[in-house]
Image 1 (tube, helix red, strand yellow):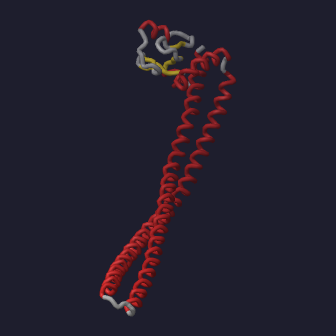
Image 2 (cartoon, helix red, strand yellow):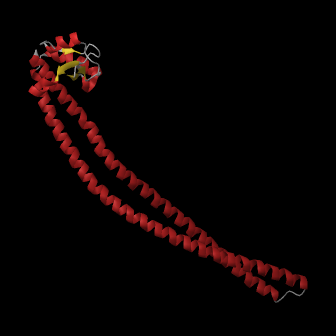
Image 3 (cartoon, one colour):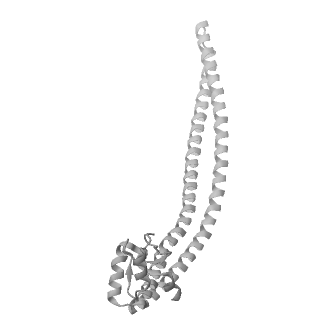
Length: 239
């Protein structure tokens, strides 16, 4: 029966090793996701800047149109000033002219402000484009590294799975059924060592009598506290 136990210990370790590959692969993919997330955010920022620049340009066009309208209005006022006769009409035209000139000054100031904003946004846009290019290059390199690492993981996992299959065929079917029954709830901790008289599955200490029977028995034993299959560390070392 010690042979059966040794085989279960080895089988359990194969199962543990195989189960550890998935989180390792996930961790590698997470590395790539972080960089891809950065690239995605940069693209969003770049798209937003394009929208903001277009909005500023549209505002500038509207101010240009408004300036043209105000210029036409000044010409119209100038034409009217030659034909008006009363003082009231002259004052009205002068007021219109002053308002139009104030609006022209405001529109010119607004155009200068918009032009400055557009230049600032363009500089920000170029910086983001440079940063994006750098990030994309790093993503390209990281993706190659991640794919290579995952390929190595998959190769190792396949090799371990093959070794497990060979071992699986040599174990007594009743022992396998017993192991799989415990593994359904205990997962990768179905078979655990006993160290310092304590089960390393539930970390409960075995009673002296139970421990004495355990170390002198050739039978496969389970922890009386948690039900996991237990073995002495020496069994693992011998195999």
